[in-house]
Length: 419
Image: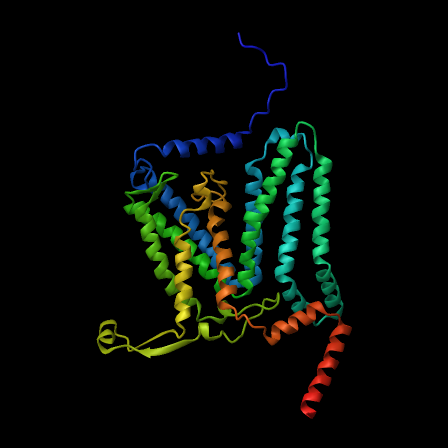
């Protein structure tokens, strides 16, 4: 006879958690099986999964191209929507239905921290562009500048209110679950949301700096799958049984070549290279700078006869090719996503054949951070420009202070001219 348990029975994991744990166990257990047992070339249903994956890919690429064509604000809206779906997938990953029923309203706390972080990060990124947009309207200008001035205090107050909310909801015998959720929420904000927010910063520096890295990620994923699908024979790592050296090498070569070709094509369009200084949707005109200017050079006779071209155009700065190379190299070093290295399960099944939103965006987040740091460190001029100084004056000084500055500058200029 089994001894009857008179105490409170531990809450059973929900079916969702059991499903993920089972997949984790299968992934680890499968690592010990003979090499090649999980390769796509040996998968009898691979063509069915290939068609499902291809169908989803076509729809995603088509929708992505349309959003890029519509412009900066629409791309930003897409990123925000993706962040919300990613947060939902990750919040649900460690939730337990039994505990949540005993903590009414506790789930809202996660979203409170999420939208507070969104307000803080996007307020910092888009504040100057918002000011540039409302400058012609004096009422909106004063309202926006006041909100920007107290932006940090507002965000801090919202965070502290969320922390107090968390303290007030603490319940005996639920401390471990509540604190684990609190830590998990902050990890999501730091690792996922903060990284993906760099994407928006890249967009307004010029769609080129968002589109090129994102396209290289897509190309790498596609050709890693195709090369592994048709030629994969040698397993790459045990933690990801379906990855092969053939897929890795094929995708790496394709990505490096694509980096040069795509950069050459995208660099021709002002719509992609010009930074957006406000939140409007109008057409852009700017001086693209030496990085995106091309020169025409004559080809040697034997090459001209072979390719039937007399001249070729390419970017006149050797640094342009270096930028392309480093972006391509950075992408193929991300072919082992952090999700698979940590043996985490798929984050969802919202995209047929691909998993969840987070499964598609994991490398995009890391690449966005790299692209932003690279652009700010090696591409953007480090010296202050007149436009940047004016932006700081507009956002940091009141109208009275700006008038006083204007008067003082006028006096200084008169003294210089008089002398």
